[in-house]
Amino acid sequence: MAYHTHIGAKQFWVADFASPAFIVFMMIAASAGSISSEFEFDTLKNVVTQAYSRTAVLESKWLAMFTHSVVLYGLATGLTLVNRLIWPNYQFALTATMPGSHQLLWRYWLTAQTANFVTLWLVLSVVFLVAAMFKKGLVATLCGVVGYFALGVISRLMFQLIDKWEPLKWNPINLMNYAVQVTMPFLTKLTHLTNTQMLWGNLGYIGLFMALGLYFFSRKEI
View (cartoon, rainbow, N blue to C red):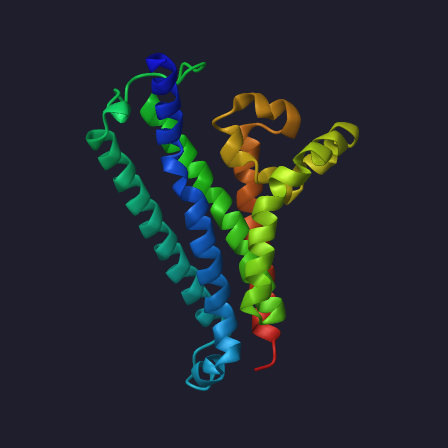
């Protein structure tokens, strides 16, 4: 029983005690509100009349949210390390290996952290885009939350469709499996993508969605 408890403790610790899910919620709400408030409270009109371009305004939002997300992940990382020192069940060596894997625990953990951060920004790029298109924070928030949790609901059907038509593997919903796949390597048989392909696919869509968001933000009436 102690052995199985120790295995579960490692997996829970690598997952940062499920903190990435809470960070996603907070960042979706903050990102959506940062864009919609510019239209809802007419602050964009005031800023633009002071010789600041819309591009500069949106880039400042991106930078602010990026900094916010880094701080939250840094805080989660720090608390995860502290919990390892405080609670007996989590006092295992970082040079140990994960069950069923030859990868060192600390490297496994950092890989999972990076993948979660990249996936977070795929979601946020969509939130920025929707907020810029509709100027409504609630709509953008709902799209982000529903899109994040729809993954578990539609994954089975999506995997079946990917088996039948290979190009579908590049759809952004499939790429959201990146954070799960780095900790569950067998998932590559379902996603039909390697971890490297997942990473570049995520970065590509993030760039695309943010470019589209900039396009709509620059052309919306104020």
